[in-house]
Image (tube, rainbow, N blue to C red; front, side, top):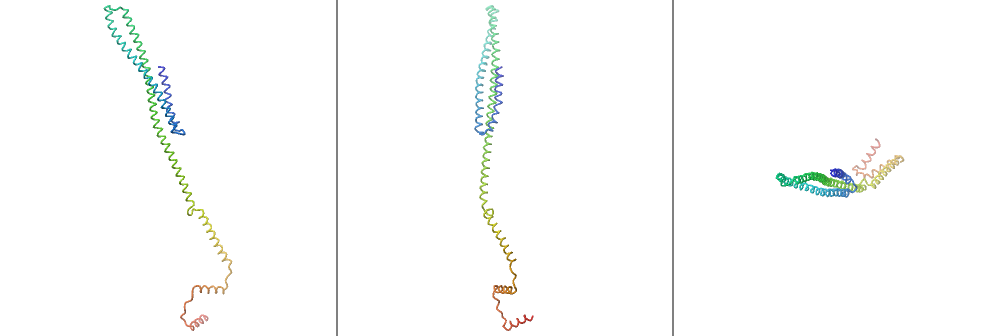
Length: 255
């Protein structure tokens, strides 16, 4: 039973530790390589336990076979003992021979108890290793499921990062192209500023000129009006006679 307890403590601790490496593998710098290394370690552990299980099963099969053989042997002894009882009653054998054979059966029965205990202990070890092997195998299956999903998530996240990076680069490139077009152009803004300043300067010069100009005399005003009349076009041909025109002019003078 000491061997059984030792194996229980040993492999129980190994089973507890088997799942811990999964977390470390998933957060490694290279998750795919790390998880493969961790998986290989778990697979190797399973292989070692499988070997121990195979050896324990062979031990159990041997011990159990010894029990079966001993039980069959004792059954034959008891059948023979029944015959010897009649022989002893008919005095065909001595009491000493009967007692010696009887003692042999008792010794075989004691051996059978020992064989049964050894077979039970071998079975316990075998069953414990079988349970551990099943747990580790399930952990390997779970490991594959979890790591496969985690690796897919990592790959998806990396792909998304690359897409966002490419999107940002394209946006920056478009922004750079737009910065040189239309009203947003630096050159256009500069020309607009120059034109605005020139307009202001022209308005200022006009104002100064108007303020500083000398006032016109009456004669100058008359000349200017006459020049304006000439520019407007030749006067319409009058239908009045010379005498009528003179009379009209004298009438204006008297008025």
